[in-house]
Amino acid sequence: MSDAPLLAVRELTVRFGRTLAVDRASFELWPGEVLAIVGESGSGKTSLLRAVHGDLPADGGRVHYRLDDGALVALDALPEPVRRQLARTRWGFVHQNPRDGLRMSVSAGGNVGERLMAAGVRHWGRIRAEAVEWLRRVEIDPARIDDAPRTFSGGMQQRLQIARVLVTRPRLVLMDEPTGGLDVSVQARLLDLIRRLVADLGLSALIVTHDLAVARLLADRMLVMQGGRIVEAGLTDQVLDDPQHPYSQLLVSSVLQT
Amino acid sequence: MNEPVLIAEGLSKDFTLHLQGGVRLAVLRGVSLTLRPGECVALTGPSGAGKSTLMRMLYGNYLPGGGRILVRHRDRLVDLAAASPREIVAIRRETIGYVSQFLRVIPRVPARSIVAEPLRAAGKDAGTAEREAERLLARLNLPERLWSLPPATFSGGEQQRVNLARGFAYPYPVMLIDEPTASLDPGNAAVAVALIQEARARGAAIIGIFHDADVRRAVATREYPVMPLAAAA
Image (cartoon, rainbow over all chains, first blue to last red; front, side, top):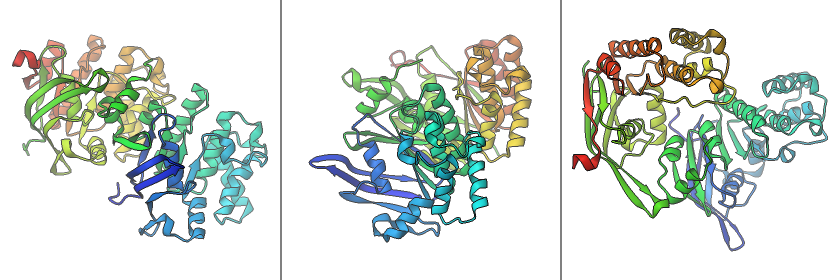
């Protein structure tokens, strides 16, 4: 494990009108680490994720990222083309709804190949071969490569979205409720897939989830958010088994045991 | 060589139950314990005295209320009670193993991979890790046809054997072992006892909860009583 964080978020603040959606959130993410952000709807966890990604303008604070050359830079200080290049290649965003992350009328192979092309790969044969390899890795039959994702099930679409994001070998992946809206059996398959890919590729990941079991399965550390603020942070099993903050205790005690 | 590998000093633990009007439960006070390589300390005391709470604190799973937990990690003493989550992750990967009573089943992950996982995390290649996993599963008499199945549907005893195999796969210098034989038949309990004795022989320092008196006599080098606070007061 490296001693330098890949991502350092400092006092990040997001307002919607007079509402504080994210209130001075600060945390670090190290290489190879999975960090879960948990909380109920409206706690600000998705806003925090989107602000880190730059989709929501920050009303205060900064996001620092370690470039491949080791330099820690403030993202808002980078020229726009450099930021866009980062987003296309070194960062990935997995949306809760695969429709937001895929182009539904483009073939499965095209969806994966498109991101490679955006990253500068031009050789068609190589793009096709990588697309086949990634469909296989996310357990989609490569025979479906020319089918459009609208003909896929929800679970397949989500796996295709993950293939599209991972094909450029990003260092950092942000996921917004990646298993939300899926049947339980489909969720289990997707979680197992995410768990293996994150470990095999040595990815750093920031995962927003309202599901504490997802956090326990995937994350090394977790943040608990309430009303836009991070109210507790720590080792995943410690926060889940010995929560300190009243809101964390409420969250943990509200889960049905099976 | 026989330097302590774990020193607990003045450990205490309270639980504050915010959902019950902030009531405070005092569970442990002034727990001090030194552990050297090759020792196996059995925690004794009645149910509810805080034995499992103490074990969980020593693993960083429960936050200590006070005191220090010095652990020899990469040749220096680190205070687990003050360590960052990332340091605790590293300590758990290389230094402290925890064999709980219950297996945490991961959907779709076969028994063999669950057992091999600590070795993979410590950097062993997949082949070596899986061979070692199979050796342990065979030793604990888990039928070979179960190795490639996820243990969700296994019996309690089968799950506990998977859990034991996982716990003993990596040679941790410090091991925390909670009721290793609770749901095992006598034959497999004997294997568990042998695994603990072999771990001691290689120099592991062990703290355990062993309710079975025969098992305790067979593995423990001494006992540490954990008394309920009301009774101790």
